[in-house]
Length: 303
Image (cartoon, rainbow, N blue to C red; front, side, top):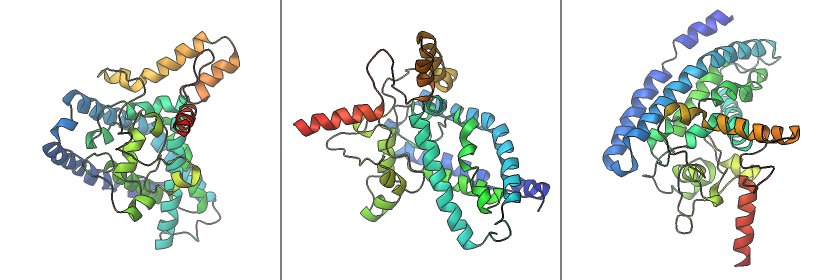
């Protein structure tokens, strides 16, 4: 197929038309059972972040689709890997590990965090919060998937799998589901695991970056169990922004980075404020998540 054939098939994709009504129906159902977990202005901001992210993503998504097409064209495997069942299985794992590293680095590189932080800015955990997508992250997102078409997997398959993964992730943003059977909790990302990810408690900071499979967090040392009895998740940021202004929600961390860069004298410090983890400081306490978690563990070991 040439690129116009792929674009024609992409235009026939109905996944979004199926997903959005489903999302809103589920939000309404959850609201009926847990009104206290919603706040009107907060949910309104979440909906605006979804809209903003869709607008910002449009051009990067088009460029990524074109790049994926030409990378697929030069792949020596393109005539071997078609749309067989095993190709979809291979893609599932490739997509999921790509999402893991994309998500993890969004938390561990401050410039990337600035594009993701809006997703974590709500102090509520509900299905509406799932729609509060990171806006700036849409610019760099597709770089993490750019290796997959070289495996011979065509761009339509990749975009479809990315959509399926996001649909799955919508449903882990809830407090109504407690822990699932152990085998499911061991393999898959679940509401329990994702509550940890959205928590601002030191124990849980920058943990559980999974898309569908939690096995990547277990393998790469970023897994944390939800322990409600010891440390109930508290949602939001370590320092909440306390605003419902959608532009501030989407851009406040970029502003904070710029201010920190301006007050640093050395170029090395300026670069650290951009590329080191959130919480790094050249003249104050080191509040990076890994540092805070290490201190907490040391304190607990002395008790």
